[in-house]
Image (cartoon, rainbow, N blue to C red):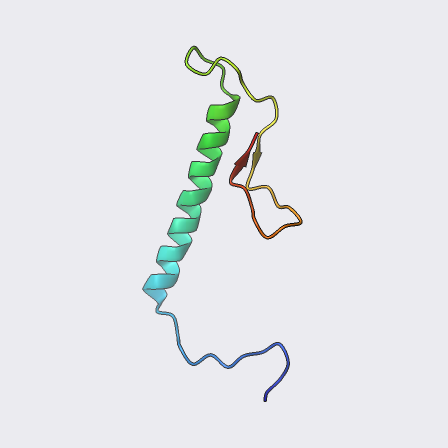
Length: 69
């Protein structure tokens, strides 16, 4: 059986894949922040602004919204 909570790793993830995942996560975070700034910014195209914007809000459910207005 094994120790509870610890699974033996049979597949190793190459370092290049780990770095790509990290870059993708950083890029996703940057895009979410950019969307949050856009929602807060008043303008002629988007006259109604959101006074409160949450980026990557952690909730009690399994889903995590990227930008919440």
